[in-house]
Image (cartoon, rainbow, N blue to C red; front, side, top):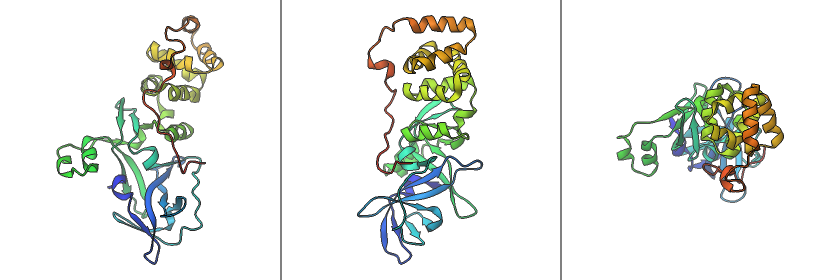
Length: 277
């Protein structure tokens, strides 16, 4: 087992042993159709200049404290692909939702594993207190707390890019939940992200989710959406429920105009630096 926090930050060397920069992150593509998501590229930050995204096939040695490339990184551009995320920026230390355990948690570490072919694959995220202590240099106390690993297939990301990329990836767990499970997810997301989830599923699915969610949650999200989109969702409900929801939405909310109705439960991590698709 490999832990992301233990592999990033080390020197990256060229075939001649010269330091070309530091390993600052790893990427995975959520567009993979089957199997675990494998590390696609490594992000190298030279001492001077912009960060470089190096394909995994140029990595000849990847060990704790030792990363060696097969060629120079001079011709490697730092542009993110459509379904690519950075594990450090978009997952580590961010809030995630465990859709099976129905809980909100902060990622203390990202769990990886070596493959038979020499690659690295994504296993899940550790949200346990022991991982926090280990990263604080208190490894002697970390053993008192067991690991709390959530499988990657059960994780929904709340970071800005992570959330958007998962919504666009058919394999992501959000696309395989029923109305009740989606209602639980929506209730734990900030208003903007919850509206994204409803919009991604289409009016019929969104209508079932709103009916399954707490009325306060459903109203909060519908009011945050464009009126035409909210109207389509309500129209997809059975007429009895649609009538009640139309009346509810026509009423002036008690907190109209206050930021609370559209505020986030927690701020999304905004990505900077290497972000373009």
